[in-house]
Amino acid sequence: MESLLEVDGTSEGGGRRGRLHLPHGVVETPVFMPVGTVASVKAVEQSVLETLGQGERGAQIILANTYHLYLRPGHELVRRMGGVHRFMSWERPMLTDSGGFQVFSLSKLRKITPDGVEFRSHLDGSKHFFSPEHSMEVQITLGADVMMAFDECVETPASWERTSASMGLTHAWAQRSKDYFEEHKTEVPWFEARGGKTQSLFGIVQGGMYVDLRKESAERLVEMDFPGYAIGGLAVGEPREVTREMIARTLEWLPKDKPRYVMGVGYPDEIEEYAKMGVDMMDCVLPTRAGRHGLVFARENGAVVRMNIKRKEYAEDQGPIDPECGCMVCRRYSRAYLRHLYVAGEALSATLNSVHNLAFYLDTMSRVRAELGASVTV
Ligand SMILES: [Zn+2]
Image (cartoon, rainbow, N blue to C red; front, side, top):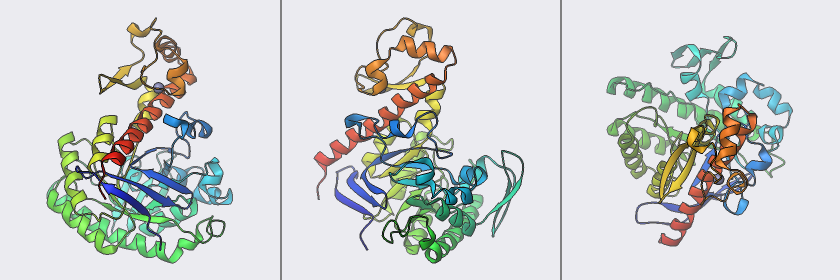
């Protein structure tokens, strides 16, 4: 089988320049994936996503949340609409999470058993049950290129004993996810249209903030032989040095020829740092969430700064958010206008701030790829 990740070479710091070969296209790595929670990157339309950033090449891959799509509009409806790509008219690669993180963070009254999790919808209080098998069924039905094993996300902080027990459950669920996936992978909506290609199921390393547990988790999942590995349960409130250490240590125990994905990070300087350490994929709601709250990123003397566009000092500022940024927002609109839109509560405010922030993230990764491309040794 063709390898999922093609690596050109590795830099001294461990960063890798490569390409992911997915059924809906090739993704240049390291890559940042905008989050399209309910099959929509909030306030940003698909044709805009396709033209964001340097060279206007746009977002290469986006993420959608299984928990949200399962509850509304329902995965069976998405199947009837031809799968998530066709439903949202996005023909580039996609990734779905397992639903685990949202079940543990959003839903009410959850009950965890070795079999799975019973929970109540945050929308209407209705009762649902997710098992590893059911998460796989939903994700195969949605049909993203990459899907994730169902895991338990432990609360932070959690004791070593609690984290260890939770991790054991995650490992048992990872094996069950894999078994179900292997048996049902040809049921993906585009199986025949894509010449018999299937999705890729990634395992998720857990282990909280304990290095020994992270090691055990990585080793156990590598034994199960997934085509890619995520590092989960980070950026949940722990200090940044701890996040960094957990990533650095876990990367040592993951295979070099397979993609590594850190879930739910981070600020622009963090994604740059982690990419240079050898992380191939990252996702975060931050560029769009911050944008909706009037927070935009810019670079000043090489450092990333956060600007609060609603501040009075921008009321008559005719400059762009970031003079160095060539995005469609910075080329056309002033800080004064963007401040006015925010203060007036205009929907366009969320759109323009999100477009700039996403372009800023994608440009950060383009630059990192160029740097890595120039420095890697084969
Ligand atoms: Zn911009």
